Length: 307
Image 1 (spheres, rainbow, N blue to C red):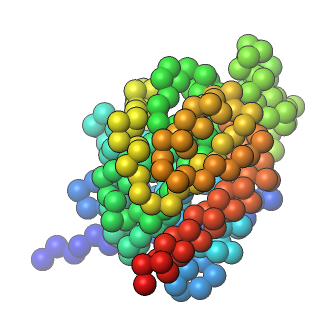
Image 2 (image 1 turned 90 degrees about the horizontal axis):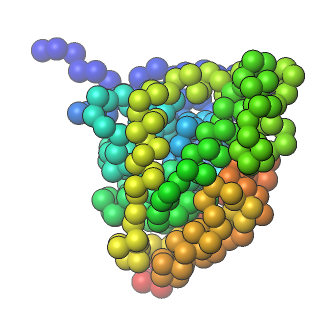
Image 3 (image 1 turned 120 degrees about the vertical axis):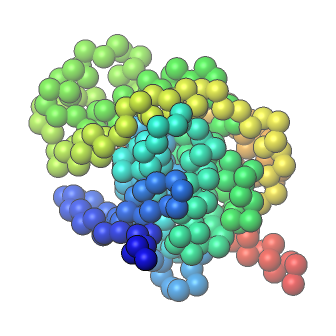
């Protein structure tokens, strides 16, 4: 009998100056492919789980590096690379957000996650919404940040987030190129990412993350975001939900984010006065952690009410 491939493969060590990144490991998902996930165990064995779903052109590490430490004080944290991004699943099939949700569901099964709060940023927002739509038994709560139920036409979102990630990953040559970007595109980048003379160690790490992307799948992901809409069914969400509105967002407008919140019965609206590239800011981690804690408290309140 042939030896069965283990579902969880090697641990991948990673040292990035100034960043406290959890170790990652590769996981084989039967019938789907091999993906990559970072995990933090949480403060106690029975801690609730938060699954972090990253944005377009990012990875689990790149989008959430500010969040691992503050979240780990309350939760077990799981942050996968979505298909086509970073070390996520590679497939010849066309990229679909629904496949991302199904990948995450399969990953939860492999990791023994029975229920979780799914936290989606930008593109991760639709994936989190689809988790509730396609795998409701896994979803105890939602945190949706800098996202909406529709991204059409999405051109600004593509320029803003892709530009920010490229800036983070920039070597001297690419950061010099940033200085020649059109003003409207450069204006959405945080000041520290608008071009520097020398790359930082963080930029080198970000460049390594982005070089792992599958270009075809990432481009298809951009199209999938632009054509996504949950308008017809998002009003059926019946789990505790917080919507983190990035009030200075030039990519996904605050109005679009508020419309999402108002379509979800009982959703909590949390104001975060930053833009779409806020994952690079120190304040991003506490903002996300506070939203997740709020949702966890509402989950506990509803359970107590049923008893």
